[in-house]
Length: 325
Ligand code: ACO
Image (cartoon, rainbow, N blue to C red):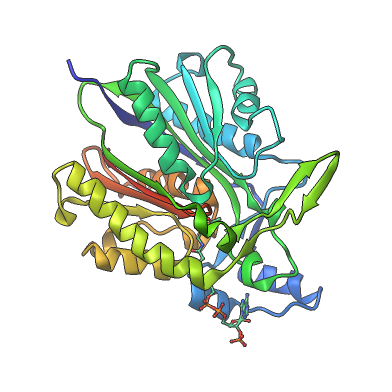
C-alpha cells in the first residue's frame, strides 16, 4: 500500500510583546532614526510585529507552537518519532535548537535536527519530513519554524529593522494511506548570498564579521516575485493540477506586495491569499506555519482544501509544497 504524509495538527505562538509601527517608530526616533507607520504600511503591508523578551529563545517559542500542534493532532510528545526545526536564529551554535526543544517537551530518543534555509526553511523541512515518512523512517513528525529575528536586526538600519518579527509555527505530519503532501519543488542559488545575509560567524572565541542582518531589498524583491511563480507552477505540474485547483495560497509573509503579485501571476483571487504579515511582520521560517495555523484556527482552511505553501529567502533559497489539508 502506498504511504503518504498529511498534516494532522497545527499550532503557533507569538511572544506577548507587540509593537505597532507607531511604537517602533517612537523607539527608533529616540535614537535619531526616522520612520513612519505610513511608510511601513505602504511599502510592506506590516502594521505590527512581536518581539521576544530578553532570554527567550527560538526553542521557547517553538515549544509553545509544538504543544498546540500536538493538542490539535490529539497526540502526546511521546508519540512523536521525528523533530525538525527550521530556524536561522538557533539558541546556540550547537547543539541544535531541535535537541533543546525535544528536551523542553520532555521527550528523548527520537531524531531531532535543525534545518537552515532562512525564510524557505519551513517548506524545506516539510519536504524532508515527508520524504522520511514516505521512506518508513518516521511515522509522526513535528515540523517547526521558530525564529527570534529581533536578535539579528540592526536597529540603526531603518531599511531592515522595521520588517521582521519573532514567532513560531508548527505542524504534526503523520503517515497516511491518502495524500497529504502532493508535491514539493525546492531550489537554491548560492550566487545571491550577498543580497540577504548575516555575514558574521564565531571563530577563536570571537564574533568575526558582522552578526546583523543585511539586505538589498530591491534585489530580493525582484528575485522573489519570479521564483515564487515558477516554484508553484512546478509543484502543480508534478501533481497534475492547475492554478484553479488552489483553494488557499500561503506564501512566505515578507511583503504584501510580493504576495499579491504572486497571487496575480498564479491567477489566485486575492480573497484566497492568506495574509498575516500585517500582524506578525516577517518571521522568516516561522511565517508559513504561523499563517497556516492562523487560517486553520479562524475556520478559513477546512479539511480537504488544497493548499499551496511557498517560501523564499536568504541563500538564495525558494520552494513550494502543494498539499491536501
Ligand atoms: N522608513 C522611512 N523611509 C525608509 C525606510 C523606513 N523604514 N526604509 C527606507 N526608507 C527610504 C529609503 O531611504 C529611500 O529614500 P530615498 O528615496 O530618499 O533614497 C526610500 O525609502 C525608498 O527606499 P527603497 O529601498 O527604494 O524602498 P522599496 O520600495 O524598495 O521598499 C522594501 C523596501 C520594503 C525592503 C522592499 O524592497 C522589500 O520588501 N523587499 C523584499 C524584502 C523581502 O521580501 N525579503 C524576504 C526574504 S527575507 C529572508 O529571507 C530573511
